[in-house]
Structures are given as structure tokens and as C-alpha cells.
Length: 267
Image (cartoon, rainbow, N blue to C red):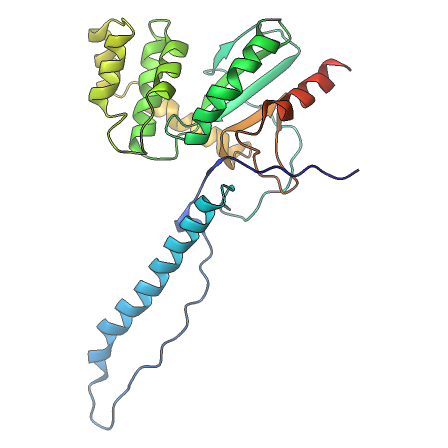
């Protein structure tokens, strides 16, 4: 049976510092005649080589983003892995903890594909499986798109202190802007708390003291440890929903996930 291929809609994870760099071509440089001071060539040659390396990195990022694929991270393309154990100690959950199916989403509040997943897939998970007691839906932070991703994740945890995690989670996706453009600045996040009727004094103290910074960092690291290679990344009963190369299928159509869940429930 042929393995289905997906048009992956996942935010690329690019770690340029970990990528193996291709050897740069050595430019032909005039070395001068006898008595020529070769030290004068060091600076221009260094600038030329740096420009070649930088331009190569930029092209890689643009190509990856343009194809809507999951970019390679350190170690190359990941092959499909077996089931993994995901620590749900600090995770946010909806549904019966004893449900036979556990759906875990690793996401970043700035990721546009995560927003699409929130709009198209999450409501279906909840109506079809969470509300019927067949599955629980779990959120895990994977903040890799910049500082505003971290602040947004911290803010959602601060809202959770007042029992409003999911309301804040939904508000963030409903007010998403361009990455690190100020859409999720701390001032904006404080404004969201006002709009949701939170105790702003408590919320602001929590946010501005970075109460959950360490937790958010641990969540992201735990995601990398279990094989997250793009966002959103969905694990169903510990198995990453991935294509034949091991890449997250991202915001694939809901039927992709539905088929897996229904197969588990039919056993």
C-alpha cells in the first residue's frame, strides 16, 4: 500500500547555527608581484567569504518558507519514529483525563499554520472527540519564533492562574500579527487580559516577573526531545502524525487526524 503524501503546512524550524555549511568556493585573488604586501588582502577576502556564507543562509530560509515544508534541523531529516512518552505534568488539557485517545499539539502562538490549525482543526477535535469523551486535547508550548512567542506563552500561563488559559489561548490566535512585530508585546498582552476581564494587577505582576519563563523553555526543549520538527506538531497517543520523511503534517485537513483516531477507537 502506498504511503499518502501530504502538502505539509507547518512552520519551518530553522537553526542556521546547527546546519552543516557547504564549503564556500575559494575566489581567485590577485596576489601581486614581488614585494607586494599580502596582508592588505586579508580584509577584502574575509568580507567576500562572509558575504557568500550569509547569502547562502538567507536563500535557504526563503526556499524553506516558500515551499511550506518543515526545514531540516540538526541531524538532517527525521525518519518516522515510534511512540514517545510525552510529559503532561504542566500541560493544558481539555476533556476526560481517562479518555482512550490523547491528542497533543505542540504550537507557537505566532505561527500562522498554528492559527490555521486552531481555526480549522481544534474545533473539530473538541466537538467530535473531546465533548463525546473519546479523547482529550492537550496543548504544549513550542516557542521558537522569537521573544514575542515566549511572552505570549507566558501570558497564557498567567491567565491560567485565573482559570482562563483557553480563553487567552483563543484570544491570542484571534489577534495574531506578523512575527515579532509588536502584536504580542507585553503591553498588548496586558491589554488582552483587560479585554478578558482578568485581575490585571495579578496578571501584570505574573507577566512582568517572567514567572513562567523557565517552564516555557522546558516545554520547548521537551518538544525537541520527542521529535517536534515543525509547528503545529500533533501526537496521537504518543505517535507524531508525520509524512513518509518523518516531518509533521502541520495544519493538514482534519480528516488526516480523524482517520488515525477512528482506527484507534475501533480496536
